[in-house]
Length: 193
Image (cartoon, rainbow, N blue to C red; front, side, top):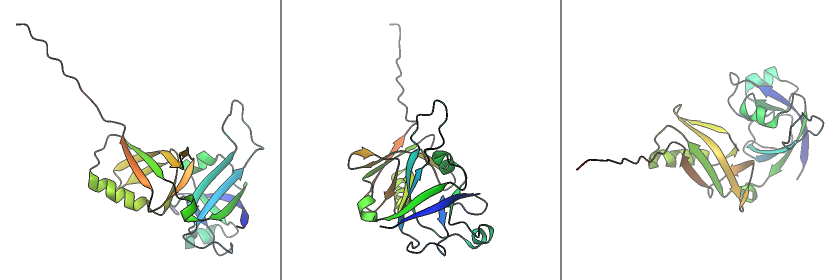
């Protein structure tokens, strides 16, 4: 499939909460809802004591710029939300990245693990969360917020037994919910008789 080389830009949450947006008016061949792969090949920047790989791969669902972003970023073709993903990619604005369309069925992950802390989830909540995540993409250590009260962190993404950094959640993906605040208390009573 065709590869697109684009210059990355960043947007703030006050304009749009979507992690990655494309200006689909300027990119032929990509439609809203397509699964895309973003790759960075940033080998020039190397920090002292930095062992993290410079080549990173993130999957996302193509979504068009909203009208306000189209006005503000007339020449930009891709924009990423400032915050978690920006820190993960660790690249400055105007850096070149590559995007490719991928087949959803071939790149669907088998399992996603989400850890929750200090909240109670019942089976109904888990079912709702699972259905909201279908046809979306996640990356490792991504913070997820549901209903402004339930907070979770993506701790594992697996396909064919391999741990991935990012992946597409489809209908057949199993979502595993883990509690980080489960406790077991032993009570030992000592009496004198």
